Length: 229
Ligand code: SF4
Image 1 (cartoon, rainbow, N blue to C red):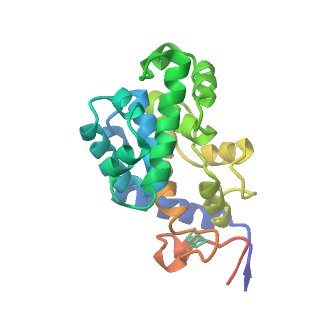
Image 2: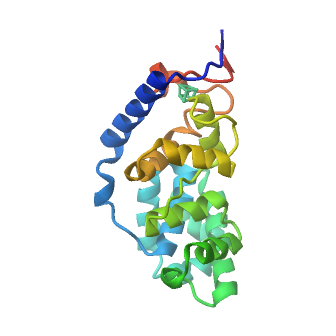
């Protein structure tokens, strides 16, 4: 069967309610979340992209314990950073990514923190974050959402694919138009929870090839747009 139907309003509301239920059960009350310094958040957000939410939080704690500060991590080898996280295969690429960002920050500002972002306007902060090597638009959006509560909904390539298949956006791309469509679907209090939901499911469950519908918490509610079943 070719499943590509557009969701009716009722079906879409049921899907959104299903996602909210998962968010509530897995991630709890968003208002109780701790706000980190902006560089800590950027490092945490990179880790979430490689290993999901819970494992990313554990990895962040390990890095925090292993280095005196982020400057020490900047001058460490890729192998030292990777082994501080774990022995998993993704850690080397992740360590390289993290060090690239820290080195780029140091080259631009001669410091290894981003506390100065507190004094920047939203557009200045966006421009600065995007000027760092290894910081994509979704990573910049995530810092602006998590640290400053700006109206951003970080959308990776994987997240866009999952949202398209769920029938929430019209195209499978992380374009601004699709981000805006998603922002309008949710009350602001759900932006962070939905970001976590996508981190945990978009790449690992709603895979480009052979999506694991049976492992997906919205299997029964998802129209599986664009997929043959
Ligand atoms: S049910 Fe399948 S297609 Fe729909 S979001 Fe889940 S994994 Fe993706």
